[in-house]
Image 1 (tube, rainbow over the protein chains, first blue to last red):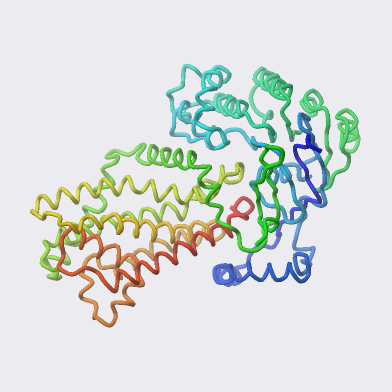
Image 2: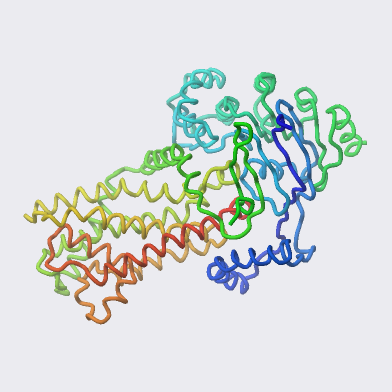
Amino acid sequence: MSDIAIRVVRLGKRFNLDRPRRGNATRELLEDVVRAPFRSLSSIFRQGIFNSNGRQPNNDKYFWALKDVSLEIRQGETVGIIGSNGAGKSVLLKILSRVSKPTEGYAEIYGKAGSMLEVGTGFHPELTARENIYLSGAILGMKKAEINRNFDEIVAFSEVEKFLDTPVKHFSSGMNVRLAFSVAVHLEPEIMLMDEVLAVGDNAFKEKCLNKMKEVASEGRTVLFVSHDMKAIEEFCNRAIYLSNGKIVIDGETEKVVSQYLVKNHG
Amino acid sequence: MSIKERTTTANFYEGKPVITIRPPKGLVPLELRDLWEYRDLLYLFVWRDIKVRYKQTIVGTSWAIIQPFIAMIVLSLFFGKLAKMPSEGIPYPIFAYSALVPWTYLVNVLSQSSNSVVSNRAVVTRVYFPRLIIPMTTVLTGLMDFAMAFAMLLGMMLFYGILPTAAILTLPFFLLLGIATALGLGLWLAALNVKYRDIGFTLPFLTQVWFFVTPIAYPSSLVPERWQAIYGLNPMAGVVEGFRWALLGKTEAPGMILAVSVLVAVCLLIGGLYFFRHKEDTFADVV
Protein backbone atom coordinates (compact mmCIF):
# COMPACT_ATOMS: atom_id res chain seq x y z
CA MET A 1 0.00 0.00 0.00
CA SER A 2 2.96 2.27 0.37
CA ASP A 3 3.12 3.12 -3.31
CA ILE A 4 -0.22 4.86 -3.40
CA ALA A 5 -0.22 8.45 -4.66
CA ILE A 6 -3.87 9.45 -4.79
CA ARG A 7 -6.83 7.78 -3.17
CA VAL A 8 -10.34 8.99 -3.86
CA VAL A 9 -13.21 7.50 -1.89
CA ARG A 10 -16.87 7.98 -2.79
CA LEU A 11 -16.22 11.56 -3.76
CA GLY A 12 -19.19 13.76 -4.63
CA LYS A 13 -19.64 17.41 -5.53
CA ARG A 14 -23.01 19.07 -5.57
CA PHE A 15 -23.76 22.47 -7.06
CA ASN A 16 -26.71 24.59 -6.16
CA LEU A 17 -28.77 25.51 -9.20
CA ASP A 18 -30.94 27.93 -7.30
CA ARG A 19 -30.24 31.51 -8.17
CA PRO A 20 -30.87 33.85 -5.28
CA ARG A 21 -33.94 36.00 -5.95
CA ARG A 22 -34.03 39.67 -5.10
CA GLY A 23 -35.90 39.77 -1.84
CA ASN A 24 -34.36 36.55 -0.67
CA ALA A 25 -30.84 37.72 -1.39
CA THR A 26 -30.94 40.41 1.29
CA ARG A 27 -32.31 37.98 3.81
CA GLU A 28 -29.76 35.42 2.77
CA LEU A 29 -26.97 37.94 3.22
CA LEU A 30 -28.09 38.74 6.74
CA GLU A 31 -28.47 35.08 7.55
CA ASP A 32 -25.04 34.42 6.15
CA VAL A 33 -23.45 36.94 8.46
CA VAL A 34 -25.51 36.36 11.58
CA ARG A 35 -25.85 32.64 11.47
CA ALA A 36 -22.43 31.68 10.16
CA PRO A 37 -20.93 30.82 13.56
CA PHE A 38 -24.08 29.09 14.75
CA ARG A 39 -24.44 27.04 11.63
CA SER A 40 -20.97 25.73 12.18
CA LEU A 41 -21.97 24.61 15.64
CA SER A 42 -25.27 23.15 14.56
CA SER A 43 -23.58 21.11 11.85
CA ILE A 44 -21.46 19.53 14.54
CA PHE A 45 -24.60 18.59 16.42
CA ARG A 46 -26.35 17.30 13.34
CA GLN A 47 -23.37 15.28 12.40
CA GLY A 48 -23.26 13.80 15.83
CA ILE A 49 -26.91 12.81 15.85
CA PHE A 50 -27.63 11.71 12.30
CA ASN A 51 -24.11 11.05 11.18
CA SER A 52 -24.86 12.61 7.82
CA ASN A 53 -25.28 16.02 6.25
CA GLY A 54 -28.67 16.38 7.84
CA ARG A 55 -31.75 16.79 5.65
CA GLN A 56 -31.55 15.38 2.17
CA PRO A 57 -31.84 18.34 -0.21
CA ASN A 58 -34.42 18.50 -2.98
CA ASN A 59 -32.79 17.07 -6.11
CA ASP A 60 -34.30 19.52 -8.60
CA LYS A 61 -32.37 22.39 -7.11
CA TYR A 62 -29.04 20.63 -7.15
CA PHE A 63 -26.71 19.21 -9.67
CA TRP A 64 -24.21 16.52 -8.88
CA ALA A 65 -21.10 17.29 -10.92
CA LEU A 66 -19.40 14.31 -9.35
CA LYS A 67 -21.05 11.40 -7.61
CA ASP A 68 -19.64 8.38 -5.89
CA VAL A 69 -16.26 8.48 -7.57
CA SER A 70 -13.65 6.16 -6.13
CA LEU A 71 -10.22 5.48 -7.54
CA GLU A 72 -6.65 4.78 -6.59
CA ILE A 73 -3.60 5.94 -8.42
CA ARG A 74 -0.19 4.48 -7.71
CA GLN A 75 3.05 6.38 -7.77
CA GLY A 76 4.55 6.83 -11.22
CA GLU A 77 1.33 6.21 -13.09
CA THR A 78 0.28 8.61 -15.81
CA VAL A 79 -3.47 8.60 -15.88
CA GLY A 80 -5.64 10.35 -18.44
CA ILE A 81 -9.13 11.46 -17.60
CA ILE A 82 -11.51 11.70 -20.52
CA GLY A 83 -15.16 12.44 -21.03
CA SER A 84 -17.38 14.90 -22.83
CA ASN A 85 -17.94 18.46 -21.61
CA GLY A 86 -19.55 18.61 -18.20
CA ALA A 87 -18.61 15.06 -17.28
CA GLY A 88 -16.91 16.22 -14.11
CA LYS A 89 -13.27 15.97 -15.14
CA SER A 90 -12.27 19.46 -14.18
CA VAL A 91 -14.30 19.33 -10.99
CA LEU A 92 -12.40 16.22 -9.94
CA LEU A 93 -9.10 17.92 -10.65
CA LYS A 94 -10.16 21.04 -8.81
CA ILE A 95 -11.00 19.02 -5.72
CA LEU A 96 -7.73 17.13 -5.87
CA SER A 97 -5.79 20.36 -6.19
CA ARG A 98 -7.66 21.73 -3.15
CA VAL A 99 -9.27 24.60 -5.03
CA SER A 100 -12.80 23.38 -4.50
CA LYS A 101 -14.19 21.34 -1.60
CA PRO A 102 -16.08 18.08 -2.06
CA THR A 103 -19.65 17.72 -0.82
CA GLU A 104 -19.16 14.16 0.30
CA GLY A 105 -16.50 11.49 0.40
CA TYR A 106 -12.84 12.25 0.72
CA ALA A 107 -9.52 12.19 -1.08
CA GLU A 108 -5.99 11.60 0.09
CA ILE A 109 -2.91 12.90 -1.62
CA TYR A 110 0.41 11.26 -0.73
CA GLY A 111 3.25 13.62 -1.46
CA LYS A 112 3.65 17.12 -2.77
CA ALA A 113 1.14 17.91 -5.47
CA GLY A 114 1.23 20.69 -8.02
CA SER A 115 -1.48 21.69 -10.39
CA MET A 116 -1.70 23.24 -13.82
CA LEU A 117 -5.34 24.01 -14.23
CA GLU A 118 -4.89 26.37 -17.15
CA VAL A 119 -1.85 28.08 -18.50
CA GLY A 120 -1.02 31.59 -17.45
CA THR A 121 -2.35 31.31 -13.94
CA GLY A 122 -1.20 34.31 -11.99
CA PHE A 123 0.35 36.22 -14.86
CA HIS A 124 0.11 39.94 -14.49
CA PRO A 125 0.00 41.89 -17.78
CA GLU A 126 1.94 44.87 -16.42
CA LEU A 127 4.87 42.81 -15.20
CA THR A 128 7.76 41.69 -17.35
CA ALA A 129 8.34 38.12 -18.46
CA ARG A 130 11.12 37.76 -15.92
CA GLU A 131 8.91 38.99 -13.09
CA ASN A 132 6.04 36.82 -14.18
CA ILE A 133 8.20 33.73 -14.11
CA TYR A 134 8.82 34.33 -10.42
CA LEU A 135 5.25 35.29 -9.64
CA SER A 136 3.62 32.47 -11.52
CA GLY A 137 6.16 30.00 -10.17
CA ALA A 138 5.40 31.01 -6.60
CA ILE A 139 1.66 30.82 -7.18
CA LEU A 140 2.08 27.32 -8.58
CA GLY A 141 3.91 26.36 -5.41
CA MET A 142 7.59 26.71 -6.28
CA LYS A 143 10.08 28.00 -3.77
CA LYS A 144 12.25 30.89 -4.85
CA ALA A 145 15.38 28.74 -4.91
CA GLU A 146 13.60 26.24 -7.13
CA ILE A 147 12.75 28.97 -9.62
CA ASN A 148 16.28 30.35 -9.54
CA ARG A 149 17.64 26.90 -10.26
CA ASN A 150 15.35 26.39 -13.25
CA PHE A 151 15.25 29.96 -14.51
CA ASP A 152 17.54 29.57 -17.52
CA GLU A 153 15.86 26.38 -18.55
CA ILE A 154 12.42 27.96 -18.31
CA VAL A 155 13.51 30.90 -20.43
CA ALA A 156 15.17 28.69 -23.03
CA PHE A 157 12.14 26.43 -23.24
CA SER A 158 9.78 29.35 -23.74
CA GLU A 159 11.84 30.86 -26.58
CA VAL A 160 11.19 34.41 -25.39
CA GLU A 161 14.76 35.24 -24.31
CA LYS A 162 14.78 38.46 -26.26
CA PHE A 163 11.73 39.84 -24.48
CA LEU A 164 12.57 38.93 -20.92
CA ASP A 165 12.19 42.51 -19.72
CA THR A 166 9.09 43.38 -21.70
CA PRO A 167 5.74 43.54 -19.92
CA VAL A 168 3.78 40.49 -21.01
CA LYS A 169 0.83 42.62 -22.08
CA HIS A 170 2.83 43.32 -25.23
CA PHE A 171 3.27 39.61 -25.88
CA SER A 172 1.33 37.74 -28.52
CA SER A 173 -1.00 35.14 -27.09
CA GLY A 174 1.31 32.45 -28.40
CA MET A 175 4.29 33.89 -26.54
CA ASN A 176 2.20 34.16 -23.40
CA VAL A 177 1.20 30.54 -23.61
CA ARG A 178 4.75 29.40 -24.24
CA LEU A 179 6.06 31.31 -21.27
CA ALA A 180 3.26 30.12 -19.01
CA PHE A 181 3.66 26.50 -19.98
CA SER A 182 7.40 26.68 -19.52
CA VAL A 183 7.00 27.82 -15.94
CA ALA A 184 4.43 25.18 -15.14
CA VAL A 185 6.27 22.29 -16.72
CA HIS A 186 9.30 22.99 -14.60
CA LEU A 187 7.39 22.42 -11.41
CA GLU A 188 8.94 19.64 -9.44
CA PRO A 189 6.09 18.09 -7.47
CA GLU A 190 5.74 14.35 -7.04
CA ILE A 191 2.18 14.50 -8.23
CA MET A 192 1.19 16.64 -11.17
CA LEU A 193 -2.43 17.55 -11.89
CA MET A 194 -2.92 18.91 -15.38
CA ASP A 195 -5.99 20.19 -17.15
CA GLU A 196 -6.19 20.82 -20.88
CA VAL A 197 -2.80 22.39 -20.96
CA LEU A 198 -2.02 21.16 -24.42
CA ALA A 199 -5.04 22.74 -26.02
CA VAL A 200 -3.01 25.83 -26.79
CA GLY A 201 -0.03 26.87 -28.85
CA ASP A 202 0.98 25.86 -32.34
CA ASN A 203 1.71 22.29 -33.35
CA ALA A 204 5.45 22.54 -33.00
CA PHE A 205 5.18 23.84 -29.47
CA LYS A 206 2.52 21.27 -28.61
CA GLU A 207 4.90 18.54 -29.71
CA LYS A 208 7.64 20.03 -27.57
CA CYS A 209 5.34 20.16 -24.55
CA LEU A 210 4.25 16.59 -25.00
CA ASN A 211 7.85 15.45 -25.14
CA LYS A 212 8.67 17.41 -22.03
CA MET A 213 5.74 15.86 -20.23
CA LYS A 214 6.81 12.38 -21.25
CA GLU A 215 10.20 13.17 -19.85
CA VAL A 216 8.56 14.29 -16.61
CA ALA A 217 6.49 11.13 -16.42
CA SER A 218 9.50 8.92 -17.08
CA GLU A 219 11.16 10.38 -13.99
CA GLY A 220 8.70 8.39 -11.96
CA ARG A 221 6.34 11.18 -11.12
CA THR A 222 2.63 10.65 -10.93
CA VAL A 223 0.63 12.54 -13.51
CA LEU A 224 -3.11 13.04 -13.69
CA PHE A 225 -4.02 14.50 -17.01
CA VAL A 226 -7.38 15.82 -18.19
CA SER A 227 -7.77 16.34 -21.91
CA HIS A 228 -10.05 16.11 -24.92
CA ASP A 229 -7.08 15.33 -27.08
CA MET A 230 -7.30 11.54 -27.50
CA LYS A 231 -4.04 11.42 -29.39
CA ALA A 232 -2.19 13.06 -26.54
CA ILE A 233 -3.86 10.78 -24.03
CA GLU A 234 -2.98 7.64 -25.98
CA GLU A 235 0.55 8.72 -26.49
CA PHE A 236 1.14 9.79 -22.97
CA CYS A 237 -0.94 7.81 -20.49
CA ASN A 238 -0.76 4.17 -19.58
CA ARG A 239 -4.13 4.24 -17.95
CA ALA A 240 -7.30 6.18 -18.60
CA ILE A 241 -10.52 6.88 -16.77
CA TYR A 242 -13.69 7.68 -18.65
CA LEU A 243 -16.08 9.94 -16.78
CA SER A 244 -19.66 10.61 -17.77
CA ASN A 245 -22.25 12.60 -15.84
CA GLY A 246 -20.04 12.69 -12.82
CA LYS A 247 -19.50 8.95 -12.63
CA ILE A 248 -16.74 6.62 -13.72
CA VAL A 249 -17.79 4.62 -16.78
CA ILE A 250 -14.60 2.61 -17.14
CA ASP A 251 -11.14 2.73 -15.73
CA GLY A 252 -8.35 0.75 -17.34
CA GLU A 253 -5.83 0.47 -20.14
CA THR A 254 -5.73 3.62 -22.25
CA GLU A 255 -6.52 2.04 -25.63
CA LYS A 256 -9.54 0.16 -24.35
CA VAL A 257 -10.96 3.17 -22.53
CA VAL A 258 -10.35 5.59 -25.38
CA SER A 259 -11.97 3.30 -27.97
CA GLN A 260 -14.99 2.83 -25.75
CA TYR A 261 -15.24 6.58 -25.31
CA LEU A 262 -15.03 7.14 -29.06
CA VAL A 263 -17.68 4.52 -29.72
CA LYS A 264 -20.05 6.08 -27.21
CA ASN A 265 -19.56 9.58 -28.50
CA HIS A 266 -19.05 9.30 -32.21
CA GLY A 267 -20.15 5.78 -33.08
CA MET B 1 -12.37 18.67 17.76
CA SER B 2 -10.61 15.57 16.50
CA ILE B 3 -8.22 15.59 13.58
CA LYS B 4 -10.73 13.65 11.50
CA GLU B 5 -13.22 16.45 11.50
CA ARG B 6 -10.92 19.02 10.04
CA THR B 7 -11.49 19.84 6.41
CA THR B 8 -7.96 19.48 5.26
CA THR B 9 -5.34 17.70 7.24
CA ALA B 10 -1.69 17.34 6.59
CA ASN B 11 -0.06 14.32 8.19
CA PHE B 12 2.87 12.20 7.31
CA TYR B 13 2.92 8.70 5.90
CA GLU B 14 6.29 7.06 5.50
CA GLY B 15 7.99 10.42 5.47
CA LYS B 16 5.64 11.89 2.88
CA PRO B 17 3.12 14.60 3.53
CA VAL B 18 -0.39 13.24 3.27
CA ILE B 19 -3.21 15.64 2.59
CA THR B 20 -6.76 14.61 3.26
CA ILE B 21 -9.45 16.55 1.46
CA ARG B 22 -12.88 16.41 3.08
CA PRO B 23 -16.15 18.28 2.91
CA PRO B 24 -16.09 21.29 5.23
CA LYS B 25 -17.79 20.60 8.55
CA GLY B 26 -17.97 22.51 11.78
CA LEU B 27 -15.86 25.46 12.77
CA VAL B 28 -13.03 25.80 10.30
CA PRO B 29 -9.65 26.19 12.03
CA LEU B 30 -7.51 29.16 11.02
CA GLU B 31 -4.48 27.01 10.16
CA LEU B 32 -1.99 29.76 10.76
CA ARG B 33 0.86 27.30 10.30
CA ASP B 34 -0.24 26.77 6.71
CA LEU B 35 -0.15 30.54 6.30
CA TRP B 36 3.42 30.62 7.52
CA GLU B 37 4.36 27.97 4.95
CA TYR B 38 3.15 30.28 2.22
CA ARG B 39 4.91 33.45 3.41
CA ASP B 40 6.95 33.60 0.17
CA LEU B 41 3.75 33.96 -1.77
CA LEU B 42 2.49 36.71 0.51
CA TYR B 43 5.75 38.55 -0.05
CA LEU B 44 5.43 38.15 -3.83
CA PHE B 45 1.82 39.32 -3.87
CA VAL B 46 2.78 42.43 -1.93
CA TRP B 47 5.69 43.02 -4.27
CA ARG B 48 3.42 42.56 -7.30
CA ASP B 49 0.78 44.96 -6.04
CA ILE B 50 3.28 47.64 -5.10
CA LYS B 51 4.97 47.31 -8.45
CA VAL B 52 1.74 47.50 -10.39
CA ARG B 53 -0.13 50.06 -8.30
CA TYR B 54 1.10 53.21 -10.00
CA LYS B 55 1.78 51.82 -13.45
CA GLN B 56 0.42 54.07 -16.20
CA THR B 57 -0.18 57.02 -13.92
CA ILE B 58 1.42 60.42 -14.48
CA VAL B 59 2.25 61.50 -10.95
CA GLY B 60 2.85 57.91 -9.77
CA THR B 61 3.57 57.41 -6.11
CA SER B 62 2.80 61.07 -5.36
CA TRP B 63 -0.83 59.97 -5.25
CA ALA B 64 -0.10 58.63 -1.79
CA ILE B 65 0.50 62.18 -0.59
CA ILE B 66 -1.85 64.14 -2.86
CA GLN B 67 -4.94 62.38 -1.53
CA PRO B 68 -4.63 63.26 2.18
CA PHE B 69 -2.97 66.59 1.42
CA ILE B 70 -5.84 67.94 -0.65
CA ALA B 71 -8.32 66.65 1.89
CA MET B 72 -6.34 68.58 4.51
CA ILE B 73 -6.52 71.81 2.51
CA VAL B 74 -10.27 71.49 2.09
CA LEU B 75 -10.83 70.71 5.76
CA SER B 76 -8.57 73.56 6.88
CA LEU B 77 -10.44 75.99 4.68
CA PHE B 78 -13.99 75.04 5.62
CA PHE B 79 -13.73 73.60 9.11
CA GLY B 80 -10.62 75.42 10.31
CA LYS B 81 -10.99 78.90 8.81
CA LEU B 82 -14.72 79.31 8.18
CA ALA B 83 -16.29 77.18 10.90
CA LYS B 84 -13.53 77.94 13.41
CA MET B 85 -13.48 74.36 14.60
CA PRO B 86 -11.44 73.99 17.82
CA SER B 87 -8.27 71.95 17.38
CA GLU B 88 -6.92 71.71 20.92
CA GLY B 89 -4.28 74.36 20.42
CA ILE B 90 -2.72 72.56 17.48
CA PRO B 91 -2.52 74.37 14.11
CA TYR B 92 -5.58 73.14 12.26
CA PRO B 93 -3.81 71.86 9.10
CA ILE B 94 -1.60 69.47 11.03
CA PHE B 95 -4.45 68.61 13.36
CA ALA B 96 -6.43 67.43 10.35
CA TYR B 97 -3.53 65.89 8.46
CA SER B 98 -2.37 63.74 11.40
CA ALA B 99 -5.83 62.16 11.35
CA LEU B 100 -6.07 61.96 7.58
CA VAL B 101 -2.93 59.82 7.32
CA PRO B 102 -4.34 56.76 9.17
CA TRP B 103 -7.81 57.48 7.75
CA THR B 104 -6.60 57.45 4.14
CA TYR B 105 -4.80 54.20 4.88
CA LEU B 106 -8.02 52.63 6.10
CA VAL B 107 -10.10 53.82 3.16
CA ASN B 108 -7.52 52.64 0.63
CA VAL B 109 -7.14 49.25 2.25
CA LEU B 110 -10.88 48.72 2.46
CA SER B 111 -11.47 49.55 -1.17
CA GLN B 112 -8.64 47.23 -2.20
CA SER B 113 -9.38 44.37 0.14
CA SER B 114 -13.14 44.28 -0.36
CA ASN B 115 -12.48 43.59 -4.01
CA SER B 116 -9.37 41.48 -3.49
CA VAL B 117 -10.73 37.95 -3.73
CA VAL B 118 -12.83 38.85 -6.75
CA SER B 119 -9.97 40.52 -8.57
CA ASN B 120 -7.78 37.50 -7.89
CA ARG B 121 -10.42 35.21 -9.33
CA ALA B 122 -8.03 33.73 -11.88
CA VAL B 123 -5.78 32.30 -9.19
CA VAL B 124 -8.51 31.53 -6.69
CA THR B 125 -10.28 29.21 -9.12
CA ARG B 126 -7.12 27.43 -10.20
CA VAL B 127 -4.54 27.07 -7.50
CA TYR B 128 -4.58 26.26 -3.83
CA PHE B 129 -2.98 28.56 -1.28
CA PRO B 130 -4.32 29.92 2.00
CA ARG B 131 -6.84 32.50 0.83
CA LEU B 132 -6.15 34.68 3.86
CA ILE B 133 -3.05 35.80 1.99
CA ILE B 134 -5.20 37.82 -0.42
CA PRO B 135 -6.69 40.38 2.00
CA MET B 136 -3.47 40.37 4.02
CA THR B 137 -1.65 41.50 0.91
CA THR B 138 -3.80 44.62 0.61
CA VAL B 139 -3.15 45.57 4.22
CA LEU B 140 0.61 45.33 3.70
CA THR B 141 0.59 47.01 0.31
CA GLY B 142 -1.29 49.95 1.77
CA LEU B 143 1.57 50.48 4.21
CA MET B 144 3.72 51.82 1.41
CA ASP B 145 1.32 54.66 0.72
CA PHE B 146 0.99 55.14 4.43
CA ALA B 147 4.75 55.48 4.83
CA MET B 148 4.90 58.24 2.24
CA ALA B 149 1.98 60.16 3.65
CA PHE B 150 3.56 59.74 7.08
CA ALA B 151 6.89 61.15 5.91
CA MET B 152 4.95 64.18 4.78
CA LEU B 153 3.43 64.40 8.23
CA LEU B 154 6.89 64.47 9.81
CA GLY B 155 7.83 67.24 7.39
CA MET B 156 4.81 69.24 8.43
CA MET B 157 5.64 68.79 12.12
CA LEU B 158 9.05 70.24 11.39
CA PHE B 159 7.46 73.13 9.53
CA TYR B 160 5.15 73.93 12.43
CA GLY B 161 7.94 73.44 14.93
CA ILE B 162 6.21 70.59 16.75
CA LEU B 163 8.73 68.28 18.33
CA PRO B 164 7.62 64.77 19.19
CA THR B 165 7.71 63.77 22.84
CA ALA B 166 8.38 60.36 24.35
CA ALA B 167 4.77 59.57 23.47
CA ILE B 168 5.91 58.89 19.92
CA LEU B 169 7.15 55.52 21.14
CA THR B 170 3.52 54.41 21.43
CA LEU B 171 2.85 55.15 17.78
CA PRO B 172 3.49 51.58 16.53
CA PHE B 173 0.70 50.42 18.80
CA PHE B 174 -1.77 52.83 17.21
CA LEU B 175 -0.59 51.84 13.76
CA LEU B 176 -1.18 48.22 14.73
CA LEU B 177 -4.66 49.13 15.89
CA GLY B 178 -5.30 50.76 12.53
CA ILE B 179 -4.00 47.69 10.70
CA ALA B 180 -6.17 45.40 12.81
CA THR B 181 -9.23 47.50 12.05
CA ALA B 182 -8.49 47.59 8.32
CA LEU B 183 -7.74 43.87 8.12
CA GLY B 184 -10.66 42.88 10.32
CA LEU B 185 -13.23 44.77 8.30
CA GLY B 186 -11.43 43.97 5.03
CA LEU B 187 -11.81 40.24 5.73
CA TRP B 188 -15.55 40.56 6.19
CA LEU B 189 -15.99 42.69 3.10
CA ALA B 190 -13.73 40.53 0.91
CA ALA B 191 -15.59 37.34 1.83
CA LEU B 192 -19.01 38.91 1.40
CA ASN B 193 -18.12 40.57 -1.88
CA VAL B 194 -17.45 37.17 -3.44
CA LYS B 195 -21.15 36.41 -3.36
CA TYR B 196 -22.72 39.83 -2.93
CA ARG B 197 -21.24 42.49 -5.17
CA ASP B 198 -23.43 45.01 -3.36
CA ILE B 199 -20.44 45.54 -1.11
CA GLY B 200 -18.68 47.52 -3.81
CA PHE B 201 -21.61 49.92 -4.01
CA THR B 202 -22.02 50.23 -0.26
CA LEU B 203 -18.42 50.97 0.56
CA PRO B 204 -18.11 54.59 -0.67
CA PHE B 205 -21.28 55.45 1.21
CA LEU B 206 -20.11 53.64 4.31
CA THR B 207 -16.76 55.42 4.39
CA GLN B 208 -18.44 58.78 3.86
CA VAL B 209 -20.60 58.32 6.93
CA TRP B 210 -17.68 56.84 8.82
CA PHE B 211 -15.59 59.93 8.06
CA PHE B 212 -17.96 62.09 10.04
CA VAL B 213 -18.20 59.80 13.06
CA THR B 214 -14.40 59.77 13.29
CA PRO B 215 -12.64 62.73 14.93
CA ILE B 216 -10.85 63.89 11.80
CA ALA B 217 -12.26 67.35 11.20
CA TYR B 218 -13.03 67.90 14.89
CA PRO B 219 -11.53 66.76 18.22
CA SER B 220 -13.20 63.91 20.08
CA SER B 221 -13.42 66.18 23.14
CA LEU B 222 -16.45 67.75 21.45
CA VAL B 223 -18.27 64.52 22.23
CA PRO B 224 -19.86 64.71 25.71
CA GLU B 225 -18.15 62.69 28.43
CA ARG B 226 -20.95 60.16 28.88
CA TRP B 227 -21.00 59.35 25.16
CA GLN B 228 -17.26 58.76 24.94
CA ALA B 229 -17.50 55.00 25.45
CA ILE B 230 -20.09 54.67 22.71
CA TYR B 231 -18.03 56.95 20.50
CA GLY B 232 -15.14 54.53 20.97
CA LEU B 233 -17.15 51.76 19.31
CA ASN B 234 -15.75 53.25 16.15
CA PRO B 235 -12.23 51.80 16.30
CA MET B 236 -10.93 54.57 14.06
CA ALA B 237 -11.73 57.04 16.83
CA GLY B 238 -9.11 55.31 18.96
CA VAL B 239 -6.64 55.18 16.08
CA VAL B 240 -6.99 58.83 15.14
CA GLU B 241 -6.89 60.16 18.68
CA GLY B 242 -3.94 57.86 19.35
CA PHE B 243 -2.02 59.25 16.38
CA ARG B 244 -2.62 62.83 17.52
CA TRP B 245 -1.61 62.11 21.06
CA ALA B 246 1.52 60.15 20.15
CA LEU B 247 2.76 62.66 17.59
CA LEU B 248 1.54 66.08 18.53
CA GLY B 249 1.77 65.81 22.30
CA LYS B 250 -1.83 66.62 22.97
CA THR B 251 -2.46 67.16 26.65
CA GLU B 252 -4.76 64.24 27.36
CA ALA B 253 -4.14 60.64 26.46
CA PRO B 254 -7.13 58.88 24.90
CA GLY B 255 -8.51 56.72 27.70
CA MET B 256 -12.04 55.40 27.48
CA ILE B 257 -12.30 55.78 23.70
CA LEU B 258 -9.09 53.86 23.19
CA ALA B 259 -10.06 50.98 25.48
CA VAL B 260 -13.36 50.47 23.67
CA SER B 261 -11.71 50.86 20.27
CA VAL B 262 -9.14 48.18 21.01
CA LEU B 263 -11.85 45.78 22.11
CA VAL B 264 -13.92 46.42 19.00
CA ALA B 265 -10.92 46.09 16.68
CA VAL B 266 -9.90 42.77 18.23
CA CYS B 267 -13.45 41.40 17.93
CA LEU B 268 -13.64 42.62 14.34
CA LEU B 269 -10.37 40.94 13.48
CA ILE B 270 -11.02 37.58 15.14
CA GLY B 271 -14.57 37.49 13.81
CA GLY B 272 -13.30 38.44 10.36
CA LEU B 273 -10.66 35.71 10.35
CA TYR B 274 -13.16 32.99 11.21
CA PHE B 275 -15.84 34.34 8.89
CA PHE B 276 -13.38 34.49 6.01
CA ARG B 277 -12.17 30.95 6.67
CA HIS B 278 -15.76 29.76 6.88
CA LYS B 279 -16.63 31.30 3.49
CA GLU B 280 -13.32 30.43 1.87
CA ASP B 281 -14.38 26.90 0.95
CA THR B 282 -16.97 28.22 -1.46
CA PHE B 283 -14.89 30.98 -3.07
CA ALA B 284 -13.82 28.93 -6.08
CA ASP B 285 -17.39 27.82 -6.77
CA VAL B 286 -19.10 31.16 -6.22
CA VAL B 287 -16.71 33.89 -7.38
